[in-house]
Image (tube, rainbow, N blue to C red; front, side, top):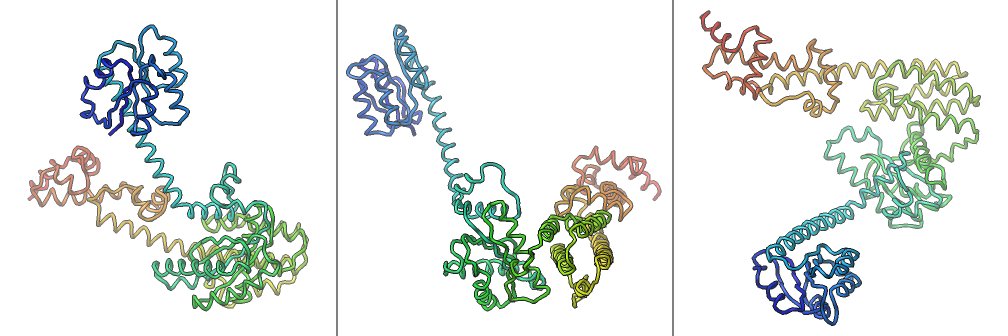
Length: 537
């Protein structure tokens, strides 16, 4: 319903406006009237009005004065002005005041109804839009924590969002991240501890891990001051500490022990350098992750700080960041063997250019192996299966006496890694194609497309097509067509089903298209094939 106010000083015209239209029938309630602008303002205080129709020439307060007062009071409504032909200056003034419409006397009641109904529809659309916008605002508020976490994760991973970052931080309640010293700590449960869990158990552990970290650090602000805890992945939690205590790593050791007890699991913590610029948030995070990798060397349930390495050589730092940005890890993930060898040669070249001491060279190479191990874990491979349980590769690195020897160790190791991954991928690809082929054999009668199958098996359509062709010698669509036609031949030979029924039974909604496919493959139409097979009997 919409409230309607009719303002007219001539009683006869006002009664005509009120009574010539059954306003209630068209969804207007209340419908009230006034004889001048002052009476109209009194009505607006008493009733909810969405549409007002007003004359301009009235005593005490005319229509233009009324509209100005309505605008001043910020009443939200549609205003339709009515006036005589001689009152053109009022029309001009109405336009300046942004009224909704202007009707020239005399006019038919039907014309007024049409105009009022148009603005009633417009009001309803605006109300729906406002309602939708309010719902979106509510959703935005409900999702604020997720938006905060996404922005923090983007910054940690070096993906600075486009636009005014300060405004985004302010909107999300994270403005304290700017213009403050900060330090990043990363706590992690080793991936291999998750391998024995079901998917449900992994998610439950993740929730428990995150909640326990948040509880332990939220209950004692003296440990870290202001901090933000974010769930990076299901076995890793990161904490950004503002204005950190210089003794933060040692304070974290106590909390790490409490976490180990509560979760009944081994875990470790890495801590990056403190920084001041927001752009360096990702640097501190990468340093914390790198320090965390030293658990492979020194064991679990410890806090490893990047500061403990005492690496003051500028060349080391340059090589260290070059290592973290190296494409070798991405190329490992996609199996780009030639690119990996190129990456390795480039890395060795940078090592030579850096002229590091033997000790620092071994640390850099050890970091490469540790990051490679983490990459293998991400790919779902057991790093121990590649490197050996005794970490013999790290032992060989530590015993190397020259950069040439280190180069030989790396070349041999990465060749071994590539062969290992290729064997695993070949086995997996064979299994995947067999599974897809079996699915086609069992469900050929359903609506199957290459894109749908790619989505089902979580690979790209082009890769699925290539894989299927390489493994079966046939492209995807040809195999599916042959399987359908094979079944169609059986039905044509051994049943009395009509052609369109057979078409539907083998996965074709269009019997004409089915007949074309059948003739293209068999050389005869389905009807001819049925007649030929039955003639032979």
